[in-house]
Image (cartoon, rainbow, N blue to C red; front, side, top):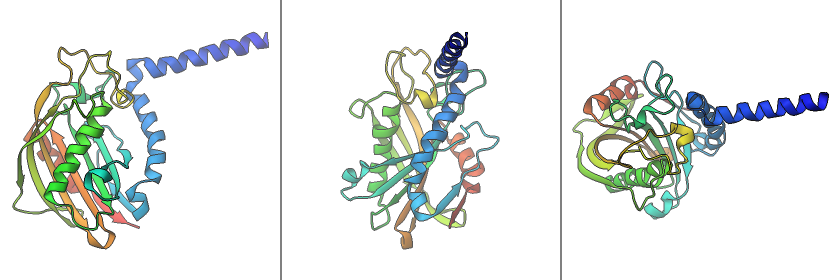
Length: 262
């Protein structure tokens, strides 16, 4: 009897695990669990960890996913022609209550295809040039963000149509950041369910759509500060479909961040 009871318990455990992994209702909880486990390793290898840097990004009472995803990338070095240490931290639109996917997929939502995050880069030996900044932004979208939702770098599109350096620097956590504003054309994340996308563990499953990865005009802002003593280029960035969203990110999140070094 004990053997049968143990087998039944094992079957129920497997069933519950499959429900948790597959059911749309648990998509947000799944994402929270995956990121907490994933970030534990990534944060240990990050630029911030190496420098003793801590950045607090206030996301409470916003419609953003409450955790920052950390990712260390080794391939940007060959695009910049120099061995560097590069970490991306980012967040995106949260899951709507009862929905099995992030707002990032909903083109009727203000947070459609929206991101907020920052790049930490050491080893370049200088402040990032405007050309390098464009290259890093393009690399992030074509080689990191779009492949996460199933679109390869060769198929993705990222075109900067307008970029303007803002006349005044922006003070973030007492540091002066050079600010740039841009208009770009790139793919949306929505796609048919038969396309494998590793980011489904993060964003949930894309709703059905008549067009895979449709092209959209997106607004973007980047904010750059170079810590010369650390050879650290710190770049905050925001992406979204409207100026109003980027203004909200700037006023209610970026201007309230805290940057400190241990």
